[in-house]
Length: 176
Image 1 (tube, rainbow, N blue to C red):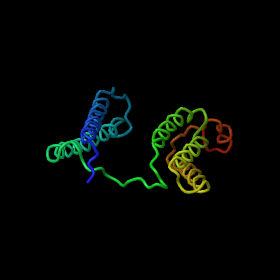
Image 2: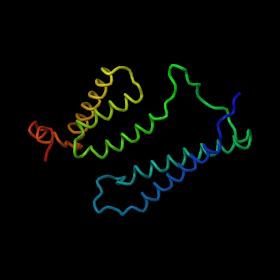
Image 3: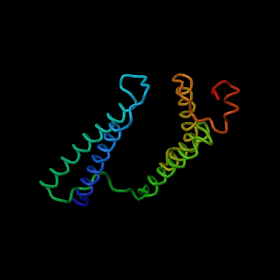
Image 4: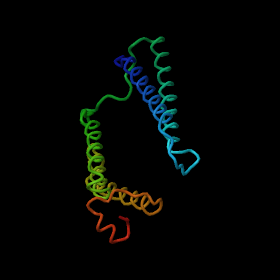
């Protein structure tokens, strides 16, 4: 057995998530009450539930990590599998997808959902080396179109139309 994982990092990460959950709960509880509420839960129901799940889940992980620290010490057996020579792990994928997410959010409003979403999804699928170019395009376009129809037509949630606003307005798919 090769003990190469430092449990203290797991504990620090889980405690950070507990702190995040507490911050979300505090933010939800201290948010000013809106004058008009359209449902029984109100706008802060989801953040309260999310914060609660974060605190509970991360607290469970923290307790399990502390038990492991006391029983077996700081070092733990590494999880997962070793890299295969033909398919080594790549350290740039996760940061690239995170950076791409920020670019997507920054350009979503001015460029529009129907343009930015397939580009962002294709980029993420490419970074994960998902199948072939053809499948990446099919998945990115299909997901975008299905999401657009569900949100704009079925749920009546407006999505940013950006550069396609005149076309979507002419087709009756968006309102100005």
